[in-house]
Amino acid sequence: PLTTVVDMHGRLMIGGCNVATLARQYGTPLYLFDEETIRSACRTWRTALAACYRGETAVHYASKALLNTALTHLIADEGLGLDVVSGGELYVALRAGFPPQRIHMHGNAKTRAELEQALASGIGQIIVDNLDELAMLANLTAYRSPPQPIALRIAPDIVTNTHAHIQTGHATSKFGLPLDALDAAAERLRTAPGLCLIGLHAHLGSQLFDLEPYAAEIDTLLDSASRLRDRHGFIIQQINIGGGAGVPYTADQHPFDVHALAMRLGEALTDECRRRGFPLLHLVIEPGRSIIARAGVALYTIIATKNLPHMRFLHIDGGMGDNIRPALYGARYSAVLAERANAPIEESVAITGRYCESGDVLIHAAPLPRASVGDILAVPVAGAYTLSMASTYNLTPRPAVVMVNGGSVRLIQRRETYEDMIARDVVSSQGQV
Ligand code: LLP
Image (cartoon, rainbow, N blue to C red):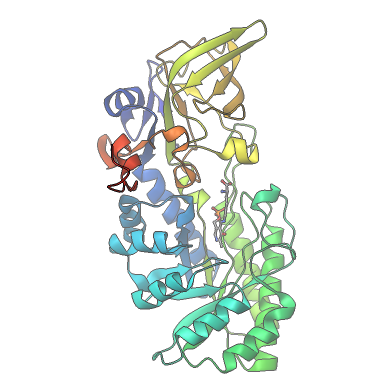
C-alpha cells in the first residue's frame, strides 16, 4: 500500500487519518507511522523469502533504523527476529518482551558489559566482528553450558554502488573479519567450549539497488563456510546476508523489487550449497530501511519565510535534529503541503531547518504550491534512520511519534520535554544557587 493518499479536497491522509489534523492535535514536528505499511513490509519479506528458497528462512528487522516499544511489539507479532547493535537496543527489545532467542547482536566494538548483558539475556546469537571480541567472548563463556551460539561476520571484499558512508562490504571496511583472518578465528574457537559457531554473516551496505552483489556475497560466504569445514571441521548451518535493500525517496528513483532479490538469493544459495556439498543452509536477512522508511511521514509547521530575488526559504520547526540524513549523506526527500497536496506547483523553494547550522537544509529545491507561514509540510518516506539518529542539538526536544491504523490513532512516544533535557544534569550542593 501507499504510505499516503490525498482525498478529494487535497488533504493528505495516512492510515485513514487527516495528517494536518493530527499535526495540530499533537504539535509539530511530528512523526506519523502507518501500522499497516509496516506490517505489509514485514509480510512481503517473509513470504518472498519463504517462496523463493526451499531451506529455512528468517527475516530479522535491523532495529538501528528505528526502535521503540510499540514497534518492537509489532515486529514480534509479525514473526520477525531482531538485529540489535547495542546494549540500548537490546534493553528496549527485552523490556518490550521480545523473545531473546529471536535476537541477534551486532557491533564492531561491543563492550564487555554489552556482551555480558547479551549472554545473560539468553540471546539467540552474537555476531562476532573481530578476533578481540572473539577472545573476550571465549573468556566470558569459558564455563558456559550449553554453549552460546555465535556467527562470524566477514568483510567479503565486495564494493557496492552506494554512498561511501553506508558502504560496508569492501576489504578496508572497519566491519568484519578480513577473509584471511578466518583461520585464526577457527583456531581460537577450537579452545572455546562455551561458544558454538553456527553461522556466517556479511553486510554489503545500505540503500542498494543491484542484485548481483548479493549473489557475489553468497559465493564468498559459502567459500568461507567450505574453508571452515575442510580445514577446521566446523559445520556452518546458517548464512546471514545482512540488509541493504534500497528504498526510493523521490519520484525519480526506482522501486526495489523484494521478490526479485528473494529469487536471486534463493537461486544463488541453492546452487552454491549444491556445488559445495552442503545441505540447504538456513538463510537470514536483516532489512531495516525497507521495513520502516515508507511507513513514516514527518510533519513540520512553516514558521517563517525568507524571500530573495531568485530564492525563497521556508523555515520549518524541525530539521537536522530529527533528520540528519540530508546534511550527512546529501540524502534527498520530497515535500507536500498537507492541506493542499493537489494544488498546482508554483515555485521551487529551499526547506530550511531551525538549527543553527547553514547545512541544516532538509530539501534544497522542493517544488511546491505557494506556501505560507502556518502551513503544515509533510515529508514522506521519513521512517528510517531519522528518529534513530535524532539529537537534541540546540537543546531542542525530539518529536512525538504517533501510530495510525485504519482511522485509529495512538501516541507511541511522547514529545521530549525541557525537563527531560536536564534530567541527567547533576547539581552539587556546593554549586547550587
Ligand atoms: N545489517 C547490518 C549488519 C547493518 O549494518 C545494517 C545497516 C543493516 C543490517 C540494515 O540495513 P538496511 O536494510 O537498513 O539498509 N544511517 C544510514 C544507514 C546506515 C546503515 C547501517 N547498517 C542512512 O541513514 O542511510
